[in-house]
Image 1 (cartoon, one colour):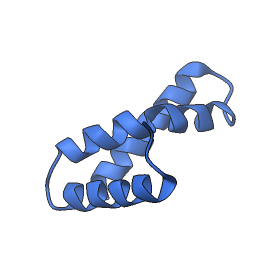
Image 2 (cartoon, helix red, strand yellow):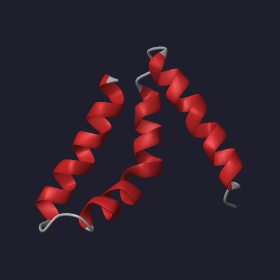
Image 3 (cartoon, one colour):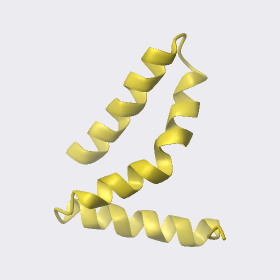
Length: 66
């Protein structure tokens, strides 16, 4: 059963807080949830699958860094 959007948002906020507090596993959980939506989004704006994958990966690198 899927969570409501509000519950997912709360979960994402908690995961971001955990990541900020040094829990690298939180990034893995965020990536599991958001990898495909981010990849689909980037595909709409670039010409190649490889470029879309690179942009999606860069998105998660920046989430981790900042």
